[in-house]
Image 1: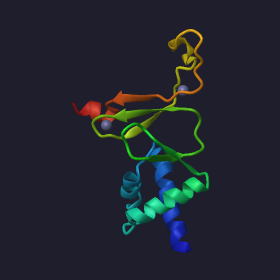
Image 2: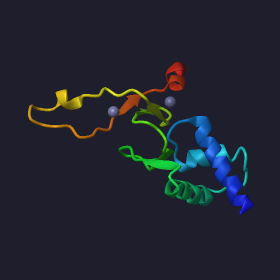
Image 3: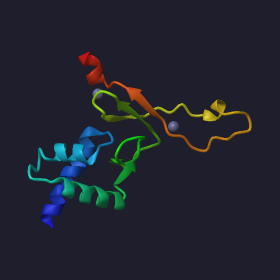
Length: 125
Ligand SMILES: [Zn+2]
Ligand SMILES: [Zn+2]
């Protein structure tokens, strides 16, 4: 059980440090700095358990495998870098999207994904 706790702590730490939606592979790479022998199957198992516990939630963006993020976030949107494929949070929301739809329509919910280059990738060119 002690081993399990250490794995869970290392994964939790990754989300607290990076503060963006992460794939299981990204979690593995980061958590291995603390636990070099951590494996992908273990990461998957822990992510699933942490989702069931309500600490993580899943993020499904078009054309990508499932990502995970902390479940305690406010309403927000995403930015996907086309160069490094990292996904970042966008805290802003345009609100009042009813002005975009024809008269008589009512928007009930929305998802927004912005695409471009992140700060690091834009600086590289
Ligand atoms: Zn990038
Ligand atoms: Zn919004």
